[in-house]
Amino acid sequence: MNDIPLATPAETAVIEKDVVIIGAGPVGLFAVFELGLLDLSAAVIDILDKPGGQCAELYPEKPIYDIPGYPVITGDGLTQKLLEQIAPFKPSLHLNRMVETLTRIPDGRFRLVTDAGDVFLAKVVVIAAGGGSFQPKRPPVPGIEAYEGTSVFYSVRRMEDFRGHDLMIVGGGDSALDWTLNLQPLAKSLTLVHRRDEFRAAPDSVNKMRALLAEGKIRFEMGQVTGLSGEDGQLSGATIKGKDVGIEVGCTRMLPFFGLTMKLGPVANWGLNLEENLIPVDTARFETSEPGIFAIGDINTYPGKLKLILCGFHEAALMAQAAVHICAPERKVVFQYTTSSSSLQKKLGVI
Image (cartoon, rainbow, N blue to C red; front, side, top):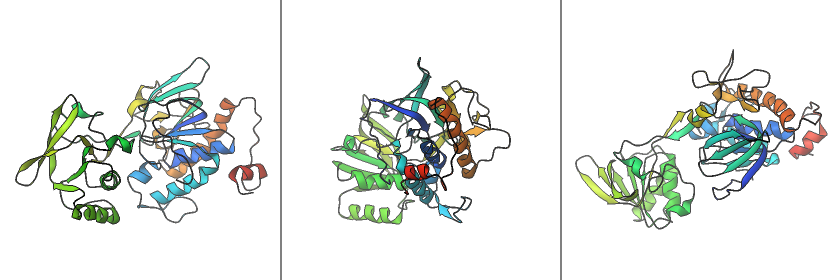
């Protein structure tokens, strides 16, 4: 993570920053850099469990050909380079969280509260959430809603929450295999369920999973979860239907990984003008209809908009120049180039 610390859900004290960025994709990460050059502190919030947005989650190994200076770079490679670039500014990354409420308080700042209970105060909010927030797809299991949040979870916020439980992980992608490997040492028992004996995860993860299976440390069931049992939101077991028959498997915690869907989410309730689930902005500041709230990247719209990472980087630069006048109106801002400014180079740690 290039020495950028990750905040934990236990950190529930009020977090005060100049700017809160919603979205840790490439555009949100580059916004940290542009803000940092202007001495503005930033916190970054993302619903995913790692930075990088779509690049990291949907195509980490897919080549990207239109990033200036890189004839080809993967989504994961671009994310790592951006994390390296912003490390000197020490942003706080708050992952596995979704901003649920955004309100303006009497002193003019914004108060943001996440679903993990974090409270942020900032003079500027930057929405860099791509097409919206990634939210987990709910598997088609009757009655699963009754168990969500108590014994069925779609992400892992604290590994310790699964210690000593009979754990069932459902899915065949990277998330399912990664958490199978990471949680197996903590779980009382672990059952991996997938509809077939072929996996979409990294080959190394699949090999490690099969080694655990051969050693009898995990159980694998081929089929689909068709029913759940338990009372008051607490799982006691699941029905797995295979090719011919159904079986009952005991479990007290379940992690279904059925992929992600894109939704605008709570952004739709923040009082911003919207056009077909996109946020209109001006092209001088990339500010929304609400002063102090900016939108950059794929979530915004304006005449001539192109949904390119390159364009999002440009929008981040202009947003930062506008944000500094809100965060530090008394400061005289002199535009500088990193190639020639010794003060900027000191901030970057290159001299």
